[in-house]
Length: 299
Image (cartoon, helix red, strand yellow):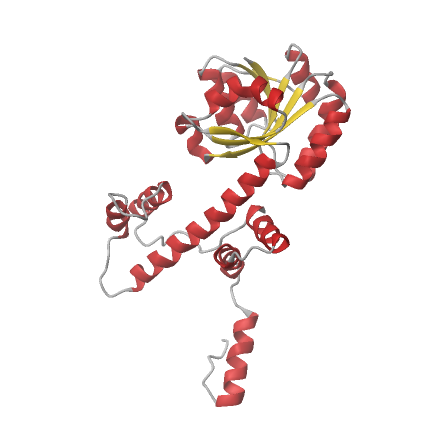
């Protein structure tokens, strides 16, 4: 199948390469010349601009976006939509907010363009292992893109989740759950690391992946990380959030769903970015004032 890929970053380039290896014809465009060169080396067709990309594709076209969520997607669509033709199909495979996806689906639909929102999980390992794809949109559009979806995913690794917006909603919750899992592993391993037993954390990770109820791919990655750096001495404990965790918590509040674990896992990421917590200073000061408890002075 023929398609265009806009965005050739860590995931976009790997996705394009995976599709090329499975016999698809992929044209791609990106801001970086290095990414275009790597696409060409993989057997794809580099395009200097969105307009050039579209000119490489025969209608009806399929164009897949792998760009950062938010204004970047709207900017790309503002350049893409005018050079597409009725019946062309756009897939947003990034981590867009589902409200934005619903809006974009409506806007493109008014131009007689199809739209799918494809929540994509798999990270840098997707090239070899495949990507888990949660796809929202019209059934006919989904079926049209299915040859691409099938070859991007491992067996059973893609699903039509419902109308536009449902794909990115499912991916949002997926990432919220991921926050909670990561925090649980992080806290558990910190207790192990602080214990008096001198555990080999890589061996513990490996052990728990053999029949334990907490076994997972994340635990396999923990084993790899601890093998490289047994006490993670080279890594600062600073953790960003990419948006989906926040959106999950906001959605839980809006729906009246208690989600304390997911909420606290998000807040823990905020804590990780503080060199010094002002709230902790307030608590220390108050304990000193009401009970005369000792405080540690700066400097």
